[in-house]
Amino acid sequence: MVSIQNKIRLCIVGNAFTVIMVILPVCLLSENGTYFRFGPSPDFILISVHIDTWTKYIITLVFIAIVDIIRVISEEIGMPIINFNIYNPDKKVITEFTKFELQLYGNSMYALTSIRGVFITLISITQFDIALWSLFIGETSALFTIRALLNEKTFEQYAELETVEII
Image (tube, rainbow, N blue to C red; front, side, top):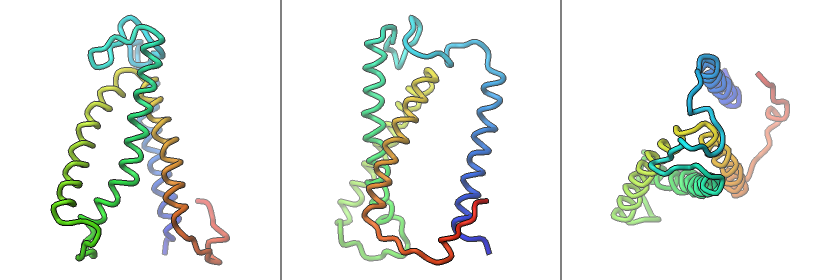
């Protein structure tokens, strides 16, 4: 029987493999275009805004950082609360919310997340450095939110987990 840790490791390896399968052809087959540039340029247009100076570029990076930090906090703290209360088939009695509140919060979070997702996609596909910046800020924020969530939990050590094998 495969342990839960090995299942997770296998999923991580599979995800890494698919990322490499996507990145290699893009990098090897890309021609000179506007996507793989870095910094401001005269023809860098981000959702109808010319990002042609370093000031505009830095303001853009700060804006993206704020949006990504709020996104990560919202998705890693708020969404699980809503999802576990709405979609957990074993949780039949809800005590933390009224039915109306949970409906309102759930639909509001899903709608706002979708709208934000459209704009983040538009921003991320304009230029590679913007996409990398967004990724970096999101993953850095996730380090802190995941650590905060894990700090609220207690972990028991099992003898079999002390000798964890790497795939």
